[in-house]
Image (cartoon, rainbow, N blue to C red; front, side, top):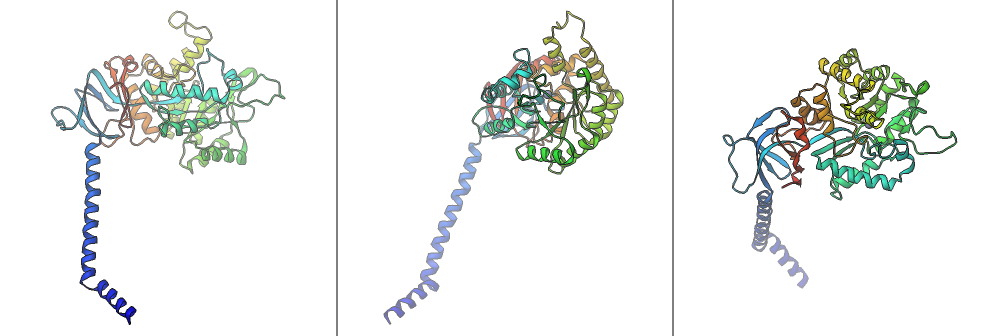
Length: 447
Ligand SMILES: [Zn+2]
């Protein structure tokens, strides 16, 4: 009975007034708890850093605006305007960029963080004699130099014998272990068997390769999928190389092989980029659906027209050709232009006339990291209007590389910003005068 009455009491308490009170207390506690969460969220929103940049001019990725204001909240661009259209929020830190232009963090289109200038160490010796540890340490310093030069994003188009170390580097940057730009990685790149270096060694020597060799259906599919599985954001192929008789550049893959690479990469959401130095290699790459053509030293007006038709973009890498010529003894401005440089002037003019999309990418690594803007100066020198070069290095590269929230100063975009001294639309060299770099809402250079 005792137990019975206890049970009854409990039941009464559960369904009776006592329990109503308990539920009320619980609900009150829950409500208080929810209120606390809400207020802490509000507090977080209030404490999220608010910075208002007031610059002499703002290049938003498309056009130049005098006396521009840009408000950054957390890691995003909150508002863009000027003194007439915007109010200064009470809690905002105000940064006056006197005499400066505020622009989107620049995007390097063609880099090799695991290479350093060939006049320091030849490409062969870098691949064959530098340890992976040394190459990684160098890459860490290169990533830092790139970021300090105002390039907050970059495409790394091949580690040249350093395997998937670009993906490891990217991970370390994203975890905040080392400073560096956002990275789009190509990992090892793919070459046809026998076409790529290092060469000139005894046949029996087992040495590291500058890229992964693969041919034919099964082999190529496996190589593309393996690279993507190991972190490749883009797939790079060499559509031709200097492997002809007497090292003449000749095509490598057949058009069917290239089409297969494009199909396999596309089915996993990746685009394909191709190194092209011959007319035929470039034609095959364009017809196969390659998205960006690198170098294109033998491009013709017909090939540029074909690129336009197929929606491929051109990454000229003017700097690489000039740097290699200078390493071979050419003194720019003193000696006449070597054939390679003269030809590039003509090719670039043809590209400009064709209206093909032109990217900004210099093949940095062949020349020093951190001097990425050298390519922009050369693009102007070779005939491209400065404002178009600024667009290439920001909104155009972002668009072609599929970076939906970068390369522009617009509300909702990521706060990757650079302040340079002077007006780069008037004198492109101003992009080398980097005074402030913000990446993901954090100032990494300047104040
Ligand atoms: Zn390259």
